[in-house]
Image (cartoon, rainbow, N blue to C red; front, side, top):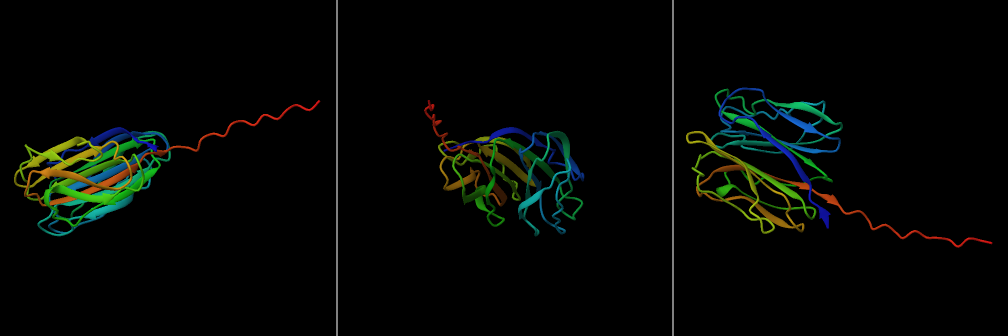
Length: 232
């Protein structure tokens, strides 16, 4: 058994402007795991993979989807904090196209042994579905998607992981651009196959990424102290 990681914070920029760069502010302690993602309405006009900056930290790209036209754009990066600080994470628009609206978001987790598996199915996934196999027990799972079809998600249904439908972090829709969904599952249970995302509404064309954040593995049980008899 492991102890699930603790979600410390979630922050997001607006998703309805073309402004670049965009920033979000985070407060971290040494060893915190930070996941950063950018979601853009479409990949028309060429794509870029510029990593975020901030805090003097190193950001590692985990997955990228939607590098072509008629699909949304989704990129995820991971970072492990090397010091305690409050700082701005800055990300540039992930597209050459200057007319595309987009946004950036970040999660901070504590008490984690690291990032695990990543689910990033081919862009255009129906119903925002990402299925993958977690590497450790009691991990958290984050899923975030951009639906190029901009289907109305007013009535939406999250998929179930470990008997939980999780928690929605963000829902945003521009009816002519895209629909944004982000959600988290705090404890995915035993390591194994999981399916994250939304089973409704139907008709989505999603760029969806799901990421495992491992919990803290239980330490070995302490051995009883051996007491030697005193010599006389």
